[in-house]
Image 1 (tube, rainbow over the protein chains, first blue to last red):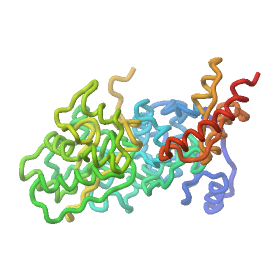
Image 2 (image 1 turned 90 degrees about the horizontal axis):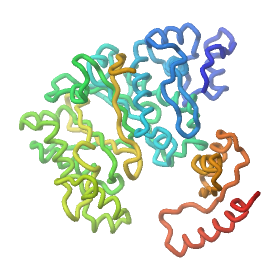
Image 3 (image 1 turned 120 degrees about the horizontal axis):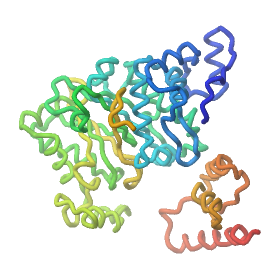
Image 4 (image 1 turned 90 degrees about the vertical axis):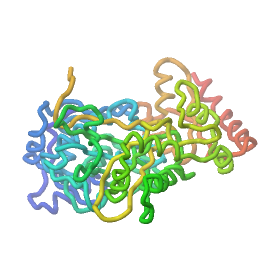
Length: 359
Length: 73
């Protein structure tokens, strides 16, 4: 949508009437929105160094565009505080990468939602939750940044349920799907460090995530037992594909890995090797595709961990994003499958609030 | 729909096939791309889980609908 900062709407002073007005305009996700007053939008824009007309993302199918200004308006409506805005900006710049395919991942029957994972000091700076009830309610930053993503998809890119968003069932993350990586008691380097950003720079990773799968294991006490449970979830017939994976390990599970000295790389390798179904099994449920099997077992790249007769999840260990999150108590990790039957959307990351190698 | 209209805009004839649940979406894309009356072929849903003989019937139906689209002036 072209930048049009002058498009102002006159509404009564009564805040409830203004909320009703937003409903009447169809500017909501079903919940009440914060009316985007000029003052609040201006304050939001104050946390982005570039002009309001700067283009953040362009919808490849419709040509609709999201400017910094449009993002700020929707961030206000979602309830974001201004200091959250750089996370939202970075997330849409990441989603604008062609290989993320945010048209397909937001229009498809697959019903995915962009999962945002914030890693690094920004998460604490804006008081995000990386701890107990990680994916649940109660934290303003997690809830409203995630919600702002959906409002932008609906209000700016017009991804409207039933019209342009054809999700068969969708999932609750389509209201908000935003978490922080937990650094407290984390034995591994943070994602932002592994992604190669300079020290002190935070990142946001966007992943077109399908539904949420809880992985419960309170009895296992070895990495193989814990990760065997995770791999089983990743390889369930309903989810297995060439797509990428996001695995959020509960601290209780992570402690078992750490005690045995397992690294992220070792964990990814193990999960890739163990998250598979037999070709016969895939055929039995009607999901075997020879081309996908061949792609995983040869072709351009051959992965030694992909065994003959086994269809694994993803193309290789790097397709599995693993991080720690959640509260201290409970053997509950999670697996989030990627959107699509294949590799139609690949996760992306961007630094938050800084410009690295900018033109 | 986007691909079909893009082909047309490049001077190549195209016929888009969509299944019935996507009719609204197809019209929406056509409208967005400035060709609200762009004709397209519509067949029953689904495709992926059909037997070969069922697909043949759908293909024949699609062919019937495609002829006037592809031969229009």
